[in-house]
Image: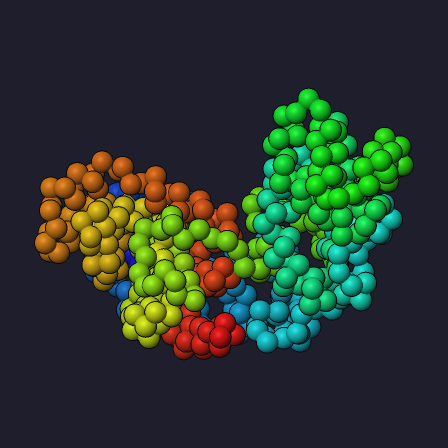
Length: 487
């Protein structure tokens, strides 16, 4: 709030000055967040040629706080649950979008159209023809009548490809392929490794004997990837896998050595080169290119349930055997997380957690670029947790957010909270000042990012990502529907 007030105080002197201050605040957040904010704001005012005395008076008397709070409340009333959040002629456009998205959104609105995220219940867009033919494909899963097609370029020697095949593809099959929504095509991009090239041939040769055998060999090759990559005789190991799958050993061996798939593999490689595919796995979804180099890339795009670990959190409450698990990634300096803490979490606890329906895990996701005290706040809660007081400190930190947010002396305020809670102040101070729990906080943040978390609060409800500080009614309806489906 103090930074927003500074920008408005600059704009009071001249409209361009608002934007000058706006840009400085975004470009140099570490300067004013970690130091005396007012002093830094005054220095910025001098840089851009403002009347420093007038500016200082405006900042110190918090002249625009009431208007800023009014903006915040109005935004929440319009459904704003995260930032940045835009309205284009009253139609919402959510998130930090690239310029081309804004251009398209403006053009759509000028033409009288509706933005996609302005109509939450609108049907999905009609599929567009893909640019990749089936020729040379290793295998296909799903109905030819499915409305959408995904083409995956894979490499049997690629670790991320193994994660995709073992962890993500079965979920895609359960949620999208089997219900007839997706047709899934595999093509090979074996690279320079001779072992990976033979592995691609081995999978195709298994498929020669039986279509299901391709997928069994596909998974077996990825499951044993580390073994055959380190082996001096990968081909013999592939023969053993064929034997485990009860394939005709002679026919399999003849196929592997025949070179019959060399042309198809080369065609796959040439196709990938034409598409300028930078690595693997790589996906083409209805003509749109998606790199799978980052973890869970396909699952994130398709909004599939993901296997987010439950045992890496800062705190958990409820019955571990409850039918629903909610994992929250939170930022103690985030106003929307505070909103969730005040308005929603108490009702979730009363009606779902305490009744054995939900197991609730809290994890850290400090937005360090804009919330420099959030990491230390996460540490403080964990330090209190070492004295069995995680939630009391969690509650105190959120309740006192206005006092410590933006305050370079936040750590001492947290120590004061510990004293107020009756904790061993010396032990708490040692824990907090040592920074020994910072790694755990940042590990949570990196973990969340790997599952598609980009803002807070973010929730995984039985593995499904739900973003933003949703009202309790939305949680209640969704959880009750999920419980009914699980019965």
